[in-house]
Image (cartoon, rainbow, N blue to C red):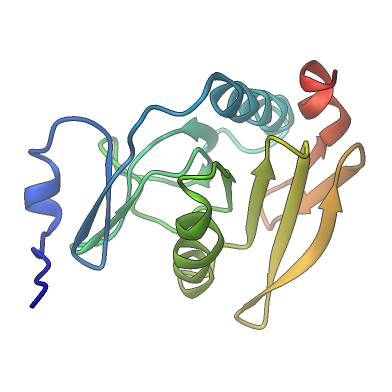
Length: 179
């Protein structure tokens, strides 16, 4: 017989290290992400941050910030674009855009488990970045379901929102990593 321990946000806040909590199950975010993983997340954040200058001041881009979906689910997206967030400790509102850099150890979680959660929570845009292929898959929420916008290598894409438009040039995001 196999039993899982069930945790809540109250447990989560006392843990050391990097974790995510999904439906009461703890997921270790170890080992630390590879340098390329972190560098791509930084490039993506930089591109988004430049664009957010034109948005209202209540919109920001953050890296690896806890999103408390509910008491049993706390996610830590690689990059998140948020607006009107009243909480300083963690994200409470549905982000406008979420970016996950996919690694071999996180692929199932990013492509299926988190994909489903982000869709259920009505995140307007979800971007999966693949370091080996230097590719971004963009999904846009339409009628409650993610619809794939395409695979992006060197193209630009404009994310439309009720607050502002944010354009990302993937040639710039991937430029430093091309051999």
